[in-house]
Each structure stands twice: as structure tokens, then as C-alpha cells.
Image (tube, rainbow, N blue to C red; front, side):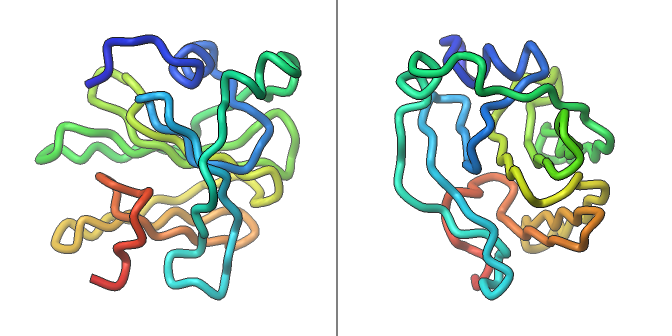
Length: 150
């Protein structure tokens, strides 16, 4: 678990996220991301970027979030969650430690709210589905690796 308060951890505690499609790790590493319905995972992880620099350049470029679903992964000691942002088109998916300490979060400006979570414990895969039927399937423990094929 992370003890350093990175920008994404601070935002998560305030129930806000940056308005930039991406994967944000609690360690402070951030990657641009895009929805990719043609990909088996439904998402493509792109180049890393500096979240702190982005927030310094425009500290108001954040949105309020509302978690709407949670699924406890008791064997892993984690909780998957998903929900929506302050605008109708936004959605996010995330994984926290049991005490709601953020591990990772993905945000998408045009996914619509994510409202459903399914878990395949055998394959360690979580599938999140939005109200517009956008589906993201990731290895819940390491979503930054494209492991849906394994």
C-alpha cells in the first residue's frame, strides 16, 4: 500500500478525478488511455504523463465523482468500484484496498457511468459495464498490463 500522498490519492480522497482519459496509479504514475471497443480489454493504455504538471497547469480541470457500485474481492483484500462523474457522459472504474485506499483508477470522459461489475476469480479479471454498454475487462490486480489474453 502507498503511504505517500500523490496527486491522484489527494483527488480520490476529495471524490474528484482529473478530466483526462487515463489510468492513474496510487504510486503517482499516470497513463493516457482510450476506449477501444475493438480490443479484447475494451481499453488501450497509452503513454505515461505527468499528472502533477497537468494539475499545476489547470487545477480546475477536475470533476466530482460518485461511486455507485462496489464489489469486495475478499481473497485479495481489495474492493472494485465504479460510478459516474459530474457530467452525464463520464465514468470511472477503480480498485481500492479494503479501507478505501486507492490502488488504481481509470477515468473516461465519454464512456457514460459504469454501473455493473462482474468478477472472474479464476482469471483474476474484472469486467465493468457502462450505461451505454461500454465494457472494460482488466486484470484487477495489474490493469496497466494487457493480460486479458492470458
